[in-house]
Structures are given as structure tokens and as C-alpha cells.
Length: 211
Image 1: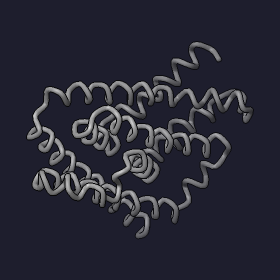
Image 2: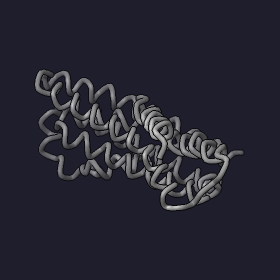
Image 3: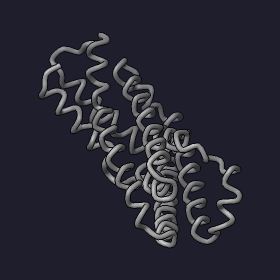
Image 4: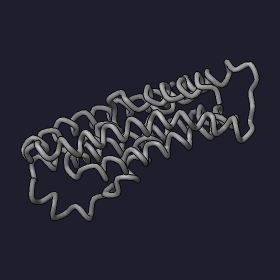
């Protein structure tokens, strides 16, 4: 693999992972509350979902992701997940002790599962992979489907991995000097943003049905 290609793929991965969206909000919230492990697991779940989309598009299944009924289903699923997680975040702000006692009942207690579901059902992720990555493949002079070409494309996830390690470590060390009150305040703000994303994706799904 050429050095230029590797650098390009890493930068593409960073462009996918770094912007603040539903996944990073969840990583920040869990990292501030529980430290490096839970933040990293959430990011790992997101990377697994990215790997799923990369595989589908690389092997020519991009058209499958653009099927209207599937986009509608993913839109509703994504909105439900985000609104639910947002409500749980807001609940953490108002019920400091109660949330700890009831935490085992939480639907997305598993951080890896939460990261995967949020990413796989997020329209932003679908647009990125079908748009940027799909265009990148189409622009190549020779389209290969060999294992080596596939592994080369997987290095995009290396950029995502670098971001996840960085933000998880930052949250882990930051957690040691941040008060519990501040953590709950972050949960409150993150909750409102997650609900906002959920409502936005819901209306986009409604728009697909109407059109």
C-alpha cells in the first residue's frame, strides 16, 4: 500500500469519526461517567458498524442501502434509539442515585451494542459511506475486489480508531478532575442533543414516506 493512500484513508477515517454527532455524544457521556473502557467500547461498536457499511459498499451493495423502505426503517430505528438514549441521559441528571440503582435494566447498558446500533441506524453514517467512500471507489482507475484492495480500504477505520483512542483517553483522565455535578450536566446537554438528532431523523423518515 502506498504511503499516500494510507494517509488519505486515515484522514478520511478522522473526517468520519471526529465531528460531534450522536456517536461522539454517547462516547463523551459514557466516558465521563465510567472512564476509558466504556468510552472505547462505544467507539468500537461504532467502528464495527462502519466496517459493516464499508464491506457492503466495497462489494457493490451501495444500491441496497439506497432502497427507500430500508432508509425509512433505519430512520425510524435511529430516531427511536437516539430519543431513548437522550431521555436516559436527561434522567441521569435528575435522578443521580436512582439511575445507578436501576442501571442493569437499561436497554443499551452494553456500550458496544449502543455504539453499533447508533451508528448502523444513523442516516449521517449512510450518507458518508455511500457518498464520500462510494465516490472514492468510483473515482479509482481500476476497481478491484481482491482481498488486498479490501484490506486497504479497511485502513479508513484506522483513522476512526485513532480518534476513539484519543477521545477515550482524554475522557478517562478528565474524569479524575471533573466533578459528578459537571458529569450530570454534560449528560443533560447530551440528552437534549440526542433527542434533537432523533427528532430530525424521524422527520426525514416521514419525508421519505410522503415523497
